[in-house]
Length: 125
Image 1 (cartoon, rainbow, N blue to C red):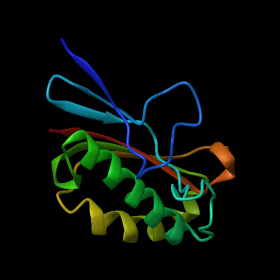
Image 2: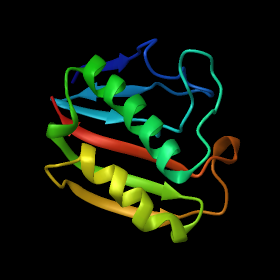
Image 3: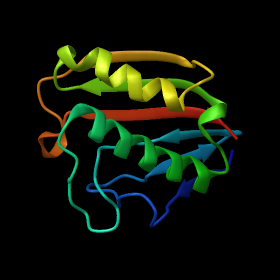
Image 4: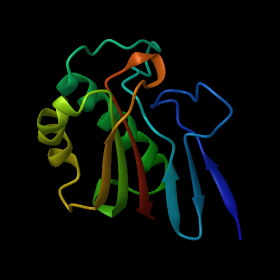
């Protein structure tokens, strides 16, 4: 079994002891992405929609670097700071995950850097 670390400068660098994604057995497992602008390392997006858009851009870059894409997503896990943002988040999410992969979406007490959303993906290559 070969395990390959995925890294791209087009998505935010890991802010801890982890990889942006791992490829193993024909699958890619992304780490959770938050709405950091990879160009400057800042969180510029304010609303849930803006933050979700940045998260999707970051996920797209990680998936591309791994040799995959949104259309190959099998399972996502979505973390929201406020379940009141569920509908607004879904409006952005649906534009990217058009194949409707399996999904879990939960509200959590706090996310890194106090962002509103974090998303991770398991996808085929």
